Length: 554
Image (cartoon, rainbow, N blue to C red; front, top):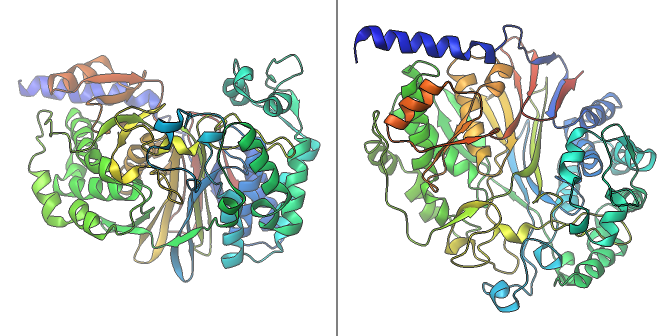
């Protein structure tokens, strides 16, 4: 290829991408507190609690409960999640992921022929309420009861549904149990339309009980009884002891260097932190930051690094002793050796690791990030797993229940509903948590917080977080531009480079194919929510235009 042609291609790429980044694309800016997430109701709840003297952790709890009302397809009292929280003492990771019921075993779904995807057998022990209570016990300042007021107000008085509500419910009324149909659809089975008003009369009673009695009645009382009754009526096996024995876990975040920055993300049972750390080290070793932004070589190398970084995900799970695995996955020696196998000019197909099978992972997750001018941060990801989880809604209190059991390797040798890699370490075991890709993340430089972010989208969460970190920290893009920029995704298996529809000129795709990439087009790759603090102290927030969202603060 001649020099003239190379120059022509570079100019073509730059011109082609210009419309994607309007000159006035700027993050929301505030001075005291900033939040970015999927809903204006979330932003309002955070601001309300902060105005009334609550701290950032109080505000996060209020925001999370608000999402359980307004976004029941992603979040409910019957879901779980992960959070990273930073105060003066440092950064802690909180695991309030669902656990497998005591009656489940490795071959439970094979023997019973029950489904891990829907109805009662799909439901794991919810951790959401215990997680929010744990945050309040460790970090909260306002009385617990005050924090549920925004959610109670929305459930009681109602709220106007968005286009996303329609997309998440249309054509699905028959998948729900009777309780769910009565709450989320009109009496004739038709979905609520954008602009219509929805109330959650049953859920508001559960929220009021939790407001008065914290987590107690959810895990051992009236709400627990409602959950157990509904699950068992729908072929599930959750017992009273399962709910009574549920515990959150406080963990040390997975920490790694990325240039001059310290990045903190979620440890196992999330695969996110490990894969991000592997990718960051490979990016440094291949000197990707020296490449031209959005060049063919940069896209190719990003795809290969993601593929190589995802490869050991099949060996991950809720491990009792992860240290030997972490040494193997993250040691400088192993990653240096791995980096030598990455070609700058063509795709390298590494062999598949033992005990892997093609799986998919749910995209029905949500995230929000909050930061204040004191350097305190909350980065929280919540999920029911599938859209409306198991489609089972409790009879008395209208709580949507998760289908998190499908995130385990439930049928050895068979794929689940969505498409990733699982192995023996993610088999069903009573009391264990399923593997996840949720990646709430916080970045520091010299001990001062720089940014916090996370995303929705199953395994695409990890690749999206990585690309936003890279573009914001190393390529000089402002926060909003870094979030809106086009993305790719590669998860090793399938051996496909996913690219976003209408974001890549045909010549880019053609040149990537020439390097050996099998291209698959997706409408979008994940939805991200990020906040940051500039050197002058100004707080910034950005939400993804790929879906609904909001950013704001005080």
